[in-house]
Image (cartoon, rainbow, N blue to C red; front, side, top):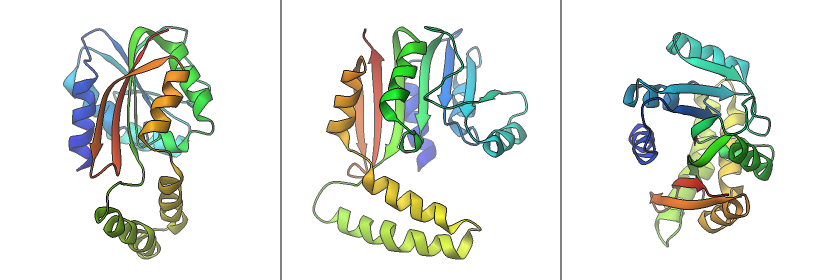
Length: 199
């Protein structure tokens, strides 16, 4: 289902021809590739700190623009980016406030910053079902199907340690953003956010 979530995020970003779109923590480039398909006249740049991820991205889309780098130290000039995106990578920022400050720095006035991220869901029944699946079955499957089972344990731990809507909204307001859109997916297990740079 994450493909439809990415498509929804890109639509809400109001990307226009000629704009520069930065995909932070691009991984294997799924959202960067999707943004390029939706707006072929845009300059989409994928950025990731892991060279192996960038290599996989290059295999999938040799014509794409990508670079190594971290959110906390973006290799871009001030106010040089129209749109910034991040799908399921904010949990991996070393320092969220520093990352927000860098995104704010490179965005043009009024620029948009959109993200998808996982967190613990809300409600009465669904969190119990989700918690059993995510806390027990996901790490178990990781030990069976993956060469790196620790990654699945990290996924579980980082999701449950990650803040929810109110904290993220407050952090972004402190960093100079205002919330334009929020969509709680699967009872909040996934949050879709779009912020605007306001000052």
